[in-house]
Structures are given as structure tokens and as C-alpha cells.
Image 1 (cartoon, rainbow, N blue to C red):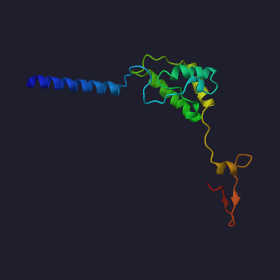
Image 2 (cartoon, one colour; image 1 turned 45 degrees about the horizontal axis):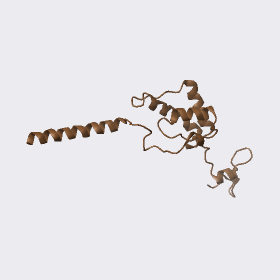
Image 3 (tube, one colour; image 1 turned 45 degrees about the vertical axis):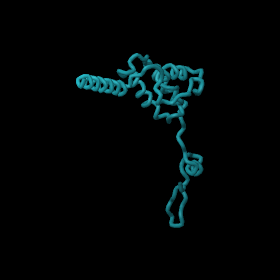
Image 4 (cartoon, helix red, strand yellow; image 1 turned 90 degrees about the horizontal axis):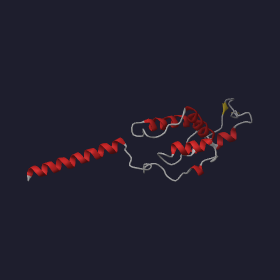
Length: 149
């Protein structure tokens, strides 16, 4: 009886260990992982009939909802797309199709074109002169100051 309990305990421990290993490897059963945002569809993309939107739907939605270009600034998108491409090629995601180098460039261009615009504080924007330079004011002591932010 004691031997059976030890064997059952070891079996349960082994099953728990295998389950943890599978979870750490990120093996998915079907569909996108539950921890990624859901709800965005290709129709929600800017210029939804464009090739960039079609490539986004094809390659991005196989793992998660379609990302909106406004999630990042233009300069931030290329590293994000490269990282996602690396994840697609990883051992866990091996069966997923990869964009060609031309498609990769088109995806990057699409996301950069429709990316979130950088935030310019109103005080800086209001203080900028027509030539784009910040207006400088001369104080009573003769020093120049920019706008107070």
C-alpha cells in the first residue's frame, strides 16, 4: 500500500512538471493566447483595402488581434515588426508563414505611414515661431529664456 502511494505521488509530480514545462514553452492549443488584446479586426485598420492592411491581417492575426498602427510611433514600428518576425520563426511558432523581404518592407512602410504622431506639449507648440524655432525672450538682466513648460 505504501509503495502504491509513493508511485501515485511520483506520477502526480511528474504530470505537474510536464504541465509546467509545456506552459513555459508556450505551446498553444488553438486560437490566439488569452493574454493578448482581442477585438481589433482588419476593418478597423486605417486604409483597410490597402496591401499593407491585407498583409497585417495575414501575418499578425495568426497570433493575436490585428494591431493598430497607432499603438506605436513611426520609429518604433520596425523593431516591433522584426521582433514579431523572430517570434514567428521561433521553435514554438514554426508552422506560421513568414513575410517575404518585400512584404516585410511593405508592412514597415504601412505601420510607419499610419503610426501614432509624437505628442507636442501645447506650451512648446504655442511658443514655436513660424520657422519652427522656439521663441526666446530676453529678461531684464539680458539673458534669453525659452517658454516655461
